[in-house]
Length: 73
Image (cartoon, rainbow, N blue to C red; front, side, top):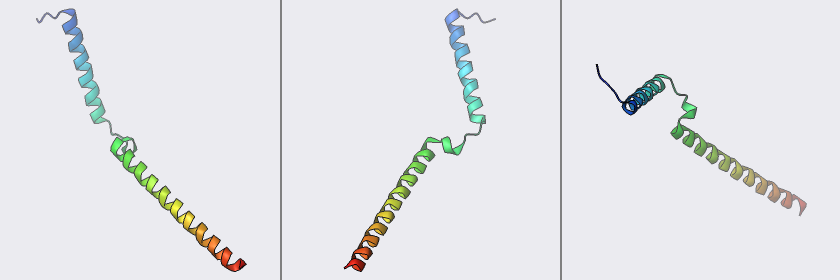
């Protein structure tokens, strides 16, 4: 029989608990939307789309203003 001191036993139990947690996390499927790199890519794409929409809206406003100015003269 192996005789552990209190601190060695505590460390051993803590390591076994951590190993069990790690195994459980690996088995559990992870939602793609929570994956950090995917979240960053989604955020970048949304920012790009927002910028594109802003540019298009600004372009339509300028075009509309030019048309209105041409009609009023």
